[in-house]
Image (tube, rainbow, N blue to C red; front, side):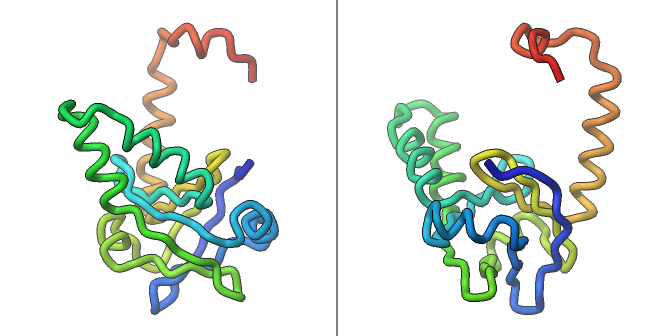
Length: 150
């Protein structure tokens, strides 16, 4: 499981270095092979290759005549890019994906269990504040969340 928030700088070549606490796990899980793709929230999703292959197969099996399914396939599969951790634990984030997520120098890597999200730092801080404000206004929780004890 990948968890936690890490602030990371994107270097001049468009590379990010994964925190050392994830590197060994990524090597054993996927030999450092990762897949980056876009997310509807305008961040990037970073999957270990085996996790991505599971998601990709589910996407491929969606009904081709369903407009929403086709849109998801085009976005997620169409932007999927394989990356390899280098000897220093870095990956190159391709320019089209950096542009999509408005990534500049300061980024945030968010562990999400089986994957990571990669955000522009300013956008992450803005969205996080927005979500916290919305959460304090919500009164009705879905049944799945009412049973969750934190």
